[in-house]
Structures are given as structure tokens and as C-alpha cells.
Amino acid sequence: AAIAYARSEYGRADAAKLLQPRAAPTAAGAEAIRQAAREGLTLTASSNSTGYKGVCYRPKERGSKKYELKVRVGDKMAFLGCFATAEEAALFFARREAGKDTSDHAALPPPPPPPAPSTAAGTEAIQQAGGEVGD
Image (tube, rainbow, N blue to C red; front, top):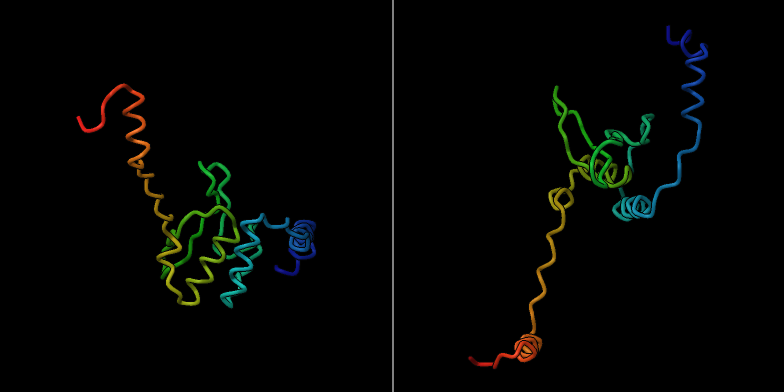
């Protein structure tokens, strides 16, 4: 049956899709590929539309993180997160498979602290408003 499918027009079309070059990664995707090389990791290729194992593209997802990473754990699928690029998701998958700690990579970086007003600026603002400093 597999040979018959491979020889059919559908099988030939599927094979042609696999041979087509993928689009070049974005700057963030290219950085994820370089980071994987620095860490000595290999991004696991797949024949799906994203080109990486466990990574799915969700075009209707709100926000900028449209690549979803899921893996099979036992007999269930486990959701590992959403990423801005397929390469970032594949890097996370490679880190997980290598047994590296991924807890700091899954969470968003903390927001920067609000800027503290300087005392000189505060004094100047009070004086411009017509008040006196030290009331």
C-alpha cells in the first residue's frame, strides 16, 4: 500500500513538498539557530509545515507567539508553550530533550521596574506648580 501511495499523484505531490526549500528564518529564528549551535544542540527536523518536531503554527492565535510546542508524555500530549518563531520552539524542545533546565526559558522575562522619580525633578515640579518645598 505504501508503494502504491508513493507512486500515486498524491504521494508524488507530498514528496515534492518535502524537497521544497523552507523560507529563511527571521532574525529571531536565526538567533535561536545560532544559540542551539553554541549550546551544542540539534534542532529536530520534521516533515510538518514548520519543519520542527512538536511545533505547530497557529495563525489565529492572538499576539506575536503563534508557534505552539506540544510533546507526547506517556499516552498524553503535554503543552509546553507558545513561541514567536518555530526555531525558538525547536530550541526549547532540544533543550528539554537534552535534559537541560528549561524553567527559565519558559517564563517571560520580568517587566522592568518603574523609573523612580529623582528628588531634583520632584522639587522642580513642586516649585513650578507654585508650592513650596518642605510644606
